[in-house]
Length: 381
Image (cartoon, rainbow, N blue to C red; front, side, top):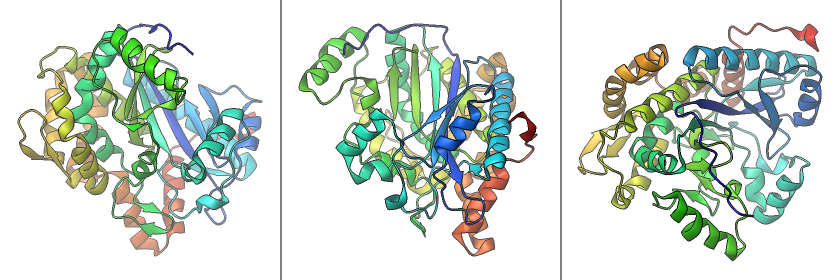
């Protein structure tokens, strides 16, 4: 299938996709309830889009296209409210978090959809192990070449999003010692990691995608699990490294951070991206996954080793005029508090594990936090 034209649109628009856990509120294990949840949601107007994911214990909720933090946050909160109300009707709880802390992959059921069944046959047990939960953020681009420029210019900032969103410290019942263990599951897939260093869409389409398609191993951009990938049918780039946060407020703040960062990068004030930037890419990504905000980052141009937390705070200061222009200063102030005092959601989950003495208590805390300030209206169903 040809890649097709890049549908250029309004630059710096944004949209959010959240993969959410469906949880049994009695034992707090995952619940194979996606089919029932989607059927119920189909009976009421959902303020966005909701669809199945790889296994029956997860769904993906997507926003419309937005330009401002206030409207994006309002829609995410409306989506949360409807999801929680539907869950209450079905006796199913919902929560964020990049991994469920104690589910067993062998118990998961692949959602009955041809693509998911095909992936299950291809990837074997990896498909069920892919019961992990991420936030994807789309940013609109004015042209295909601009999309590739932003994709590669963002490479040095990718650890920021991993550390700020990290919410998957436990997996299969144990503390992994990673703040984001989710990404280890993603890395198992053959087309994960980074995109090839090409800055021309014509070259990307002709010299990379067409050749890959000719091998027969890929058919569309969906077959690439890159950390950031172009989405020509939407006219966006899609950031895929974030764990699903425990709150929609954090999800909105992360999207606005990416939007402001792209606005800064489009001024071309940073040094141009180069292939050599990727020499430290995997190391920087590991540091963010393993240690979160306490990780280190090697600057790809200067080779200086920096505390990741300090690099985030310095970047937030640089972004202040861009956030003001985009009316997202409140969102970036939220992330500043995360970096300076609150910590990421991996820390929140570990704290509740310590306080409750069990992994079930972590999930209960995540469920409570997701529905915090929720205005539930079960009657609409």
